[in-house]
Amino acid sequence: MTLLEERMGLDEYIRELREGFQVEEEPTLEFKLTSSTLTRLLQDQELLRRILELLAHDIHFVREQSANLFKNEVLLWRDPDGCFSLRMAIWAADADVFIHDHNAMGVTGCWFGKLLVENYEIKEYVSPERVKLELKEKLVLDPKNTVYIRPQDAGIHLVSLAEGEFAVSLSAYARPIPRGYLRKFDPKTGEISRIYHPTRQQKSWAARLLEILDKS
Ligand SMILES: [Fe+2]
Image (cartoon, rainbow, N blue to C red; front, side, top):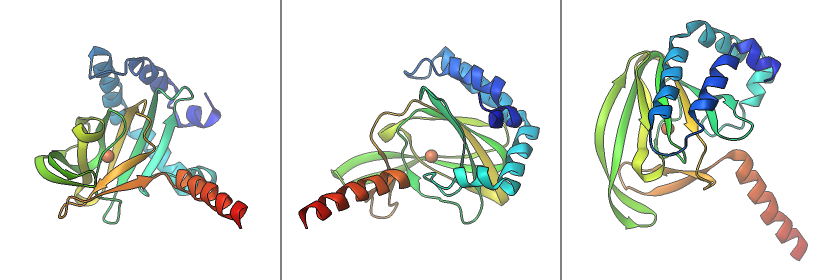
């Protein structure tokens, strides 16, 4: 446990979540316990305030967030053994809003404001890069409401601000299936594109550039 997690008051929650995420299969009793820890986290408005103060005033904390996949995502904890991560996201008008999948199952809840969650289903793979997508359900999450996220094809969704200026989500994700990217879906054409973590993209560009330099 580092000083930052103690300063944020996350240490007790992290211990509970680590226990809950030891089971990595389908939602089980243990996973529901994880969800109950998340529900208690969602009631902790003081924690939300402390994190927002770090984001607003601590340049080191802000810089740590610069390599996240979504620009509105804040990584609160990634467990050292990789069994789970805890992430919040700030939803405003210019947040990263698009239909995507995840590589892990998880629980997402509303910490502030109102969140819109749209769940999609793949009706057909037209090609490996194109699908026919159908909107399955539309949910509005009020504070403390949670939903399960399923990995890959089973959990394609879009999250956005349902109303007002801001909403905040808090998500706990289990150990990811190693794939190295998320998929983004175009709602009109069904076209699939890959979203790589910025550091992974840079790593792969650098490796390719080195090959080119070696040949020249
Ligand atoms: Fe998501």
